[in-house]
Length: 148
Image 1: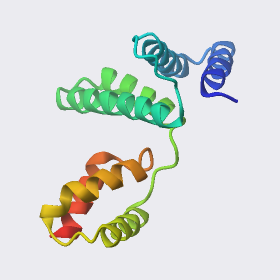
Image 2: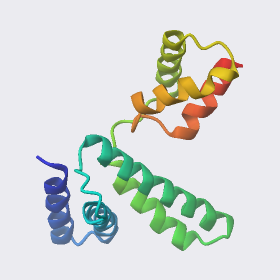
Image 3: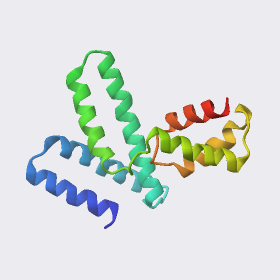
Image 4: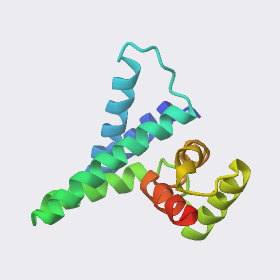
C-alpha cells in the first residue's frame, strides 16, 4: 500500500473512532504531503522523501514542545507530544545507542576517518545511511565522540 493510501485509510479510521489527537497528527501529515506535491518541483513522494518529510515534522514539533515546556504551557506541550507520537508511528524503528555506535564505527572504518577533520566525510555517509533510523543530532554527537 502506498504511503498516501495508508494515510487516507488511517484518517478514515481516526474519524470513525473520533480520535481527535490522531486526526490532528494524520491531517498534519496529509497537509505536508499535499504541500510537497504542489510546490512546483515535481518531486515524487518516494521512501526517502517520506522519511525526510516526517523527520522535518518531528523536529518542528519537538522544538515547539521544548519551548512550551520551558514556558510552562503544558496544555500546548501535550498537543505537540500527541502529534509527535502519531508521526513517530510512520517512521522506521529508531536505533538504540549501541546499534548506532556500531554502525558509526563501521562507517568510520570504511571511510578511513581518524580525526575531527574527517567529520564531514563521515557525516555525509552516516546521515544518508541512517536516515530515519537515528536523529541527526545524535549521529553528529556520537561521531564527534568517536573521532575525538
